[in-house]
Amino acid sequence: MATAVDKGAGVELLTGSEVMAHICRLADVDVLTAYPIRPYDTVMQFVSRMIANGEFDADYIPAESEHGQFEVVKHASACGARVFTGSSGVGWLYAMEPLAVTAGLRLPMVALVGCRALDDPGAFGTEHNDALLVRDLGWMINFPDTPQESVEMGLMAYRVAEDPRVFLPCAIAMDGAFLTHSQATVTVPSQEQVNEFLPPYDRGDLLLHPDNPITIAPQANEDWLMEVRRQSSEASKNAYTVLKEVHKDYCRIFGADVDPFLEEYMTDDADVVLVGMGTMSLPVKVAIREMRKDGIKVGMVRLKWVRPFPTNELRDSLSRFKAVGVIDRDYSFGSPHDGGILFNEVKAALYGADNQPFMKGFVCGLGGREVLLEDVRSMTDQVLATIKSGKPDNEVTWMGVR
Image (tube, rainbow, N blue to C red; front, side, top):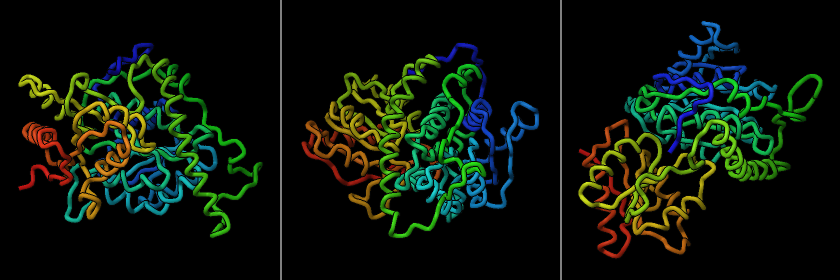
C-alpha cells in the first residue's frame, strides 16, 4: 500500500478535483483551457482561484466550446507549453475531432475526464464509457480510486506523456462525484520533490517555433498514414516500458511503495477475486472484509492503467486464482458475451494463459447507481458457483437492475 509522502509535504483535506488543481500548480502548467460541464469543471474552478490568488502563474483561457478548448491546448503543446484541460461525458465526445488526432501528432496533452454517463436521457452519474472512447486512439488512460492516488496518477501522467520516447496524450479518468467531489486526507508533495521528479517539457526538434520552421499535421493520405499509425503504436509500446521506469523514480522520491499497474487487496489466500477499476474498489473492499468474516476467501485486483494495458502483469496475477469476476462500470452493446469493455479486455489478456481461471462478467453501477454490499456478495457467490460447476459462466450479469 502507498505510504505518506513526508519530505516537506503537507496533509490537506481535498477532493479529487482539488488534487488535480494542486498537480497543475506543482507541475507549473503553462496553458489551461476551460469550458463548463459537470463534474469535471470543479477542477477548473479551483485552478482559477489559485491563479487569482497568485499561487501560480499560467495562461487560463475560457473556451467557446469543448472542441475549441482541446484545440487550444493541442496547439499550445506543439509550441512547447505544458498543458492541462478536461471534460466529461458528451462534452468529451464533442471534442472528439481534436482528441482523435492528438496522439498521431505526438502531443503530450494531459486531460481530466470527470467520468459521467453519456446522456440521453439526461444523466450525470458515473460511467466509464466516456474515458474509454479514446482507448484505441493512442491515448494513455489511468483510473485513480482515491484523492491520494490522484497525486500519483497526475504526476505520472506528465512524466510519461512528456518523455520523448512517448509523446502521447494521457487521460486521467476520475469517477464523477465519487472522486471528483469526495474529500479525503491527502499528503500533497513539496515543490522540491516534484521538481526532482518532473523535468521541464522539451519537444526538441519537434518544437513548433519561428526558429525551427516545421510543419505539423500536413496532408498525408495514403502516402504516410500507415507510418504515422505505426509510430503511434510504437510510442504506446514505449509508454509501457517508460511507465515502469518512471514509477521507480516516483517511489524513490515520494516514499511510496505501490505497484505501477495493479492494486491487490486480500489476495494472498484468495480462491476468487473481483477485478475492476476506479472507485468501485471502495464498496468492494468493504464487502470483502465482511465476507472474510464468514470464511469466504475472496480478494480484489484493481487496474490503475488501462492504456498501456498491463497484459503480462494481469495474466500473472489472475492465473493464481480459481475464478475471476470482472466488474464493468461501462457497457459494450453487441460485444462477445454482451460483456463490458473491461471484461472483454481481461478475457483477451488471459487467453492462452497456462492456468486460466474461470471468468464471470458483471455490469453494474451505471449512471452513478450505488454498488451495494449485497451486490458485491451476490457477484462473489456467482463467481464461486463457476468453481462448483467446473465450467465458466460466459453470460454477463447486470447487477441491481429494477
